[in-house]
Image 1 (cartoon, one colour):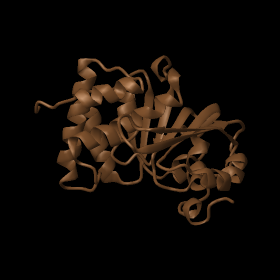
Image 2 (spheres, helix red, strand yellow):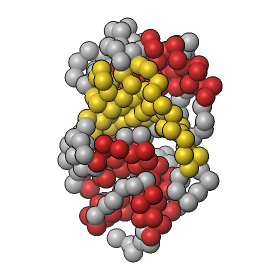
Image 3 (cartoon, helix red, strand yellow):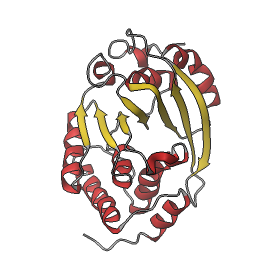
Length: 243
């Protein structure tokens, strides 16, 4: 492995705050190398510069601790919907090894990459699943089984809520990563969130450490069981958002 300068990474994490041991740092560096290798043959990320990946993908993923400080203490079950190259699920698993993590993505090539990362990093208590949220939220082992659902996927909040809230157990949370303020988006999604059994708890605005990169975490509590008709069949949540 190359000799990387991780001083800024350590400083960024200290501001969250998240602490890593040497082994965890090495897992992040290997993850970076695998991401770059695989990105040469398939589209995983447009961000490839070392420092940018660490800040915009790894630190951004771990910023979940701003909404959920108990990540450091509890063995929570987490599902990452539309995980893509593994963000935020894999960084969360590396930093908080007690988490039980499911990565769900609709593209099998990406799932192959995720399994390679899981294997090479020696991660346990994490699985990568190939499928669509609309199918895997039907009544069997995934539905309303998770303490936390997270997503950095690019979709409006109404659509994301229909994808994500069915996976969350009553008393759990759906936390959506956003790159803009999103007051209008949140207001437009309130009907959908309520219909799906959720309630907007809070909106956490912040900048990534030592940057002008604005981020928002939208925290939605699961208050009631999601009606069985949701999510609707594949394609409809995006095409015709509840509203």
